[in-house]
Figure: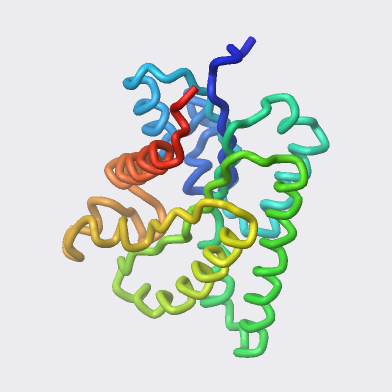
Length: 220
C-alpha cells in the first residue's frame, strides 16, 4: 500500500527511459530513473517512480502505451503527481535517415506536431498536475551525426511549442548535455550519440532533479 504522503511519478519514453527495465533486477532499469531515485532516497523524500519506457518507441507508439495505461486504469490507480514524457529521437531518425523526400519530411513533421497535441490533450483531460516534456537530444558522436542536428532542432521546436500550448514544462536537454564536456570526451557521456553511459544517466538525473526543485515538487 502506497503512503498518501508518497509522491508518484510516471515516466513515458523510449529506450533512454526504458533502460532494460523489464529485464533488470531493478524495475526502474539501469538508466537515469535509477539515479533519480537515488537522489530522492538520499534526500529522504518518499517517492514511487513508474517506468513506462519502451525501446524503439516513436511518438505514435507511445500513444499505444498511454492508451493501454488508461484502459487498465494505471493513471487512476497510481494517481501520479507528475508525468514525464521523453520521446522524439526515434522520430528524428525516421525523418532524417529513411530516405524520405522533402515533402514526406514536411508531412511527417506536421503529423508529429498534430499527434503530440492530441497526446497532450488526452493527458490534460484527466490530469492537471505537472508534465515534463524532455527535449530530444543528440550528441555529434560519431561526427556524422552533425548532419542530424537540424532535424533534431525541428522536433525540439515542436515540443517547445506544445509545452506552452498545454502548460507543460519543456526540459531543454540538448545544450545542457552536449556542453557538459568537450567533444573529445563525448564518449564519457554517450555510447553512440543517442544512448547514455552511466555518467550520462547520472547527469540527466541531476538535471531532472533540479527541475523537480524548480516546480516545488518536494513541498507538502
